[in-house]
Length: 224
Image 1 (cartoon, rainbow, N blue to C red):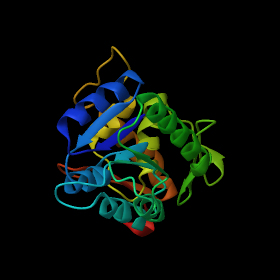
Image 2 (cartoon, one colour; image 1 turned 135 degrees about the horizontal axis):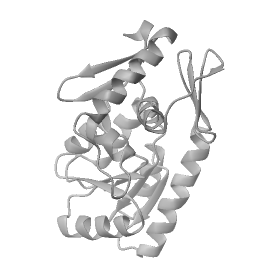
Image 3 (cartoon, one colour; image 1 turned 180 degrees about the horizontal axis):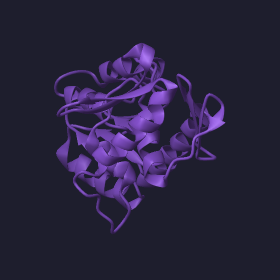
């Protein structure tokens, strides 16, 4: 599970990153709203933990931009602002939960895990892009309603792309999804998987665009 931690307090962010890592999460830390918005466009996350008092913007601006793209990515606001109006404003801006500082780590852990469980239910079990469908629970892919059998690594790449369909997914984000403890991907492994997937998906009107230096975009042909 990948978490985007948006927090400008370096000491707090370091402590939170360590705790999240101990809980089994991979953490990307953003100290500014602009960095967070770039990360959300180029990487795949399962949860955002968002401070409101950022140096370059209000954290709610990041939240509004995320929700304007119809993203269901769960967002937990973690902030020192504890007034009723702040809590209501954060939730009305699209946050899924709100936790005020100071807080207990056990409560944060419980809320994080609850949000991820809830979001997995929200997403449902099927992601559809054009003529392609992916069942996240059964780990099955169908094209035009017929099974499309993929090796595990290619399935992992496709899942990362379909979760962010129409948006850029960086090579590092895909590699993070595929990484197995104690095993490293060869430098050209992602390109190999992309090449194989392109060939498999082309007959069904699904393309994978490469944006040099940025990553890959999965799109139905009528969107390319």
